[in-house]
Length: 317
Image 1 (cartoon, rainbow, N blue to C red):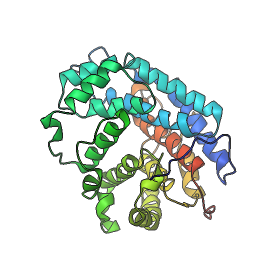
Image 2 (cartoon, helix red, strand yellow):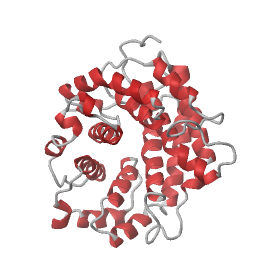
Image 3 (tube, rainbow, N blue to C red):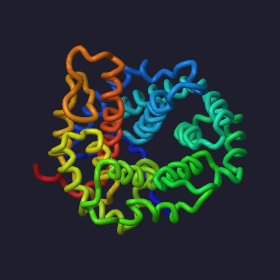
Image 4 (cartoon, one colour):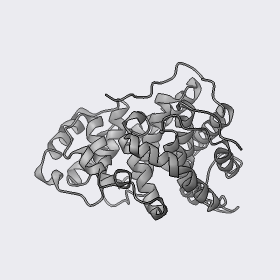
């Protein structure tokens, strides 16, 4: 049996409550002001690049749904629900997923994206039936080289109410989190894989007790060093994901210094660039959005998890 985070009834005492709430609030404000950039083009189901269209919308849905569910402040939950509703509207209340699945029945990303909405109670009966059919095909059970991505698919299947096409534990065993390699082997690309191993295993932080004790201890031991390294390299997006992972660890301390570093890296209007400095003056709106949207969403997501985590004590600094 796993223990899930419950949505708090109201704000709780927390050593970093004011800072975290400010980061979440200002991040959501920035995303809301720029939500037009999440709109999908007419060719989204045919020739448009899903990495530039569906991926941002899916990230908006995933992370706003978590904030809408878990943040202790009702006004921030309301803002996040507005963003989730906007994302759902862009999919034409789910009709888009039927087009995507019919066009690419072998592709996993439509199922993963639909799973984010289904987890939040936003569903379409025709899509449910179509996905149930395609995920039951023999081709769906072919082995995938990327085991972290397979965890994402398995989590989406569970969210939609489908049987797992593979064993979750067996797939986890082939990931970084499952194998617990020597910590100095971790580099930027594999670090993102590691954070997503944690997110898929814990349903994006909702069920942190799903972390095996050995994995939790490994992360507790090495995550501070990794986080410090990527903060020094000014990789703000990855640092935000690592802080989200930290909030999934039992009894994790609140690293005030790390949070203050991210807060200081933001633009005046609350956006966090993915790395280094904010876009320079004169940068176009679309380029500014691309440079900041993911890390700003991650900051609001990580801040929500940290706000609802069970903490041992405030870290010095």
